[in-house]
Length: 80
Image 1 (tube, helix red, strand yellow):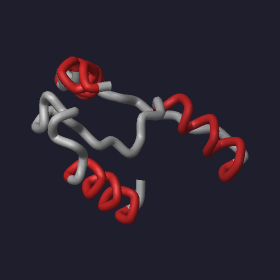
Image 2 (cartoon, rainbow, N blue to C red):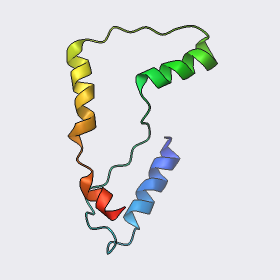
Image 3 (cartoon, helix red, strand yellow):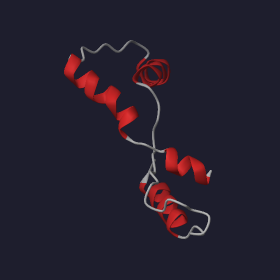
Image 4 (tube, rainbow, N blue to C red):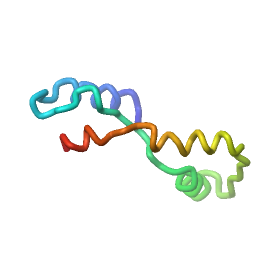
């Protein structure tokens, strides 16, 4: 997401009809939700024409895995 998209999304969220938003403080604007594997596939195919390797320490992977569960977005799903 570039800055223009982030600003636009923030403005749209701030101007949303509050009567339809039951949880006004429960929204999260995200710009990227690709997995490292998906990103590596695109990069190697389109840009690098090679391969990407990485050694990720277990404690960092555990932290990254926890992010998916750290945000409870159930309230915003109600507003759908």
